[in-house]
Length: 225
Ligand code: CTP
Ligand code: MG
Image (tube, rainbow, N blue to C red; front, side):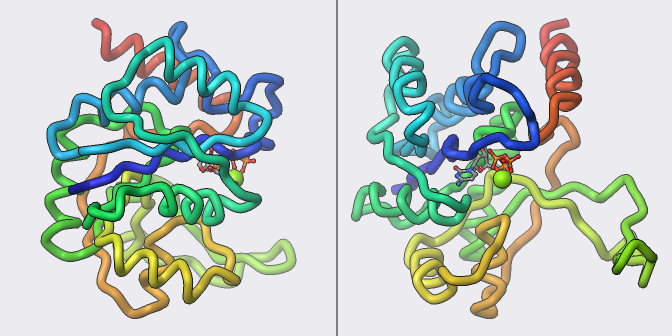
């Protein structure tokens, strides 16, 4: 059994919008609804847990009711950091579940084929994520000056979904909960686990700032033609 945890409990502070980021409309549809549709239809996913916050809980709840997803089993409250939200989501997962998939609702454009591939790799290696090659040159900096240029060939820009064996992830979460991280795989890396990289696509953008919304609108238009 595989459970998907869909995160929608962030504040969206970098977006500077009055609307909660997971509910912001892209071509008339809330961002959160895009990934939920893909997961709800995906044969390898058995249940979905949605993590919301106090401010958007009511709206998330009505979205779920309106769209009547078959697999959404629970809506739970998130925490201060992303990893606290994941932890709360893990608590609501069916005890019979052996696998978990974690996804940021801020990434609406996941393709079903990519979900299949990352699940397959997760099941084979115990942990897997989607990633693309960075297009930019990335440098390490300190105090406003460049310290070092990282070799682009050895870098990858990670995305979600990320898929894990549940027991390994839960253990990593318990062990490293004091450390601040921005994705789930980082916790596993700390315990020395190997995380398999699956090539993703550039369309799977994360909506972070307002300009990402413009791009999101164009991506949807491109899909419809
Ligand atoms: N998230 C969450 N709980 C938190 C923080 C983040 O569920 N305490 C979720 C967000 O809803 C988002 C995903 O994690 O889907 C990725 O986080 P990010 O893009 O940083 O979103 P926000 O934290 O909402 O935005 P910001 O950092 O600009 O405040
Ligand atoms: Mg954040």
